[in-house]
Length: 162
Image (tube, rainbow, N blue to C red; front, side):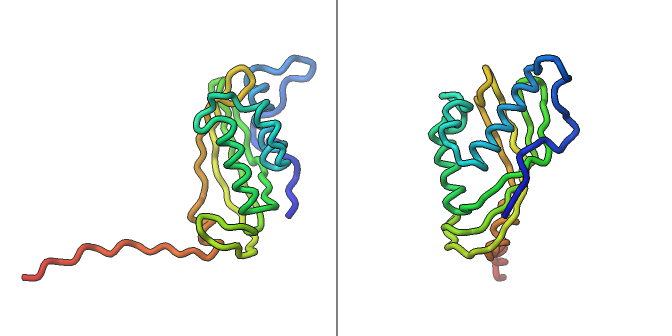
């Protein structure tokens, strides 16, 4: 599965030609590198450069475990950044799509070989050119359904007999 390079596809463009990047542009570049070099390139050494020691949640080692786990479950995982936006200067919002082949156990599901795709949004806060906090939400239900998982709704409580 091939994905293009991680480039912003949204309304926010590059820094003005000839001028230094703003703090927001520097932050966008950090996040772009994070997806391109760490998530797509699996270069875990870059995590130590881009993720602050007190990153929440989990610090750099927690991020390495998350990324390694994703690559174990989906060995060819690729992220495409659909939008990369700066919000309030110290935060960056990323809308992304991930694709990969289910080649390893994921949430208790044995490898299926299924080609899957899911999307999500991540928000990062940065300081000093490093990620200091991150929050992500993605379509986990859609991903699980692509892997053949089913959802059982809870049964309503039984009516008391008269």
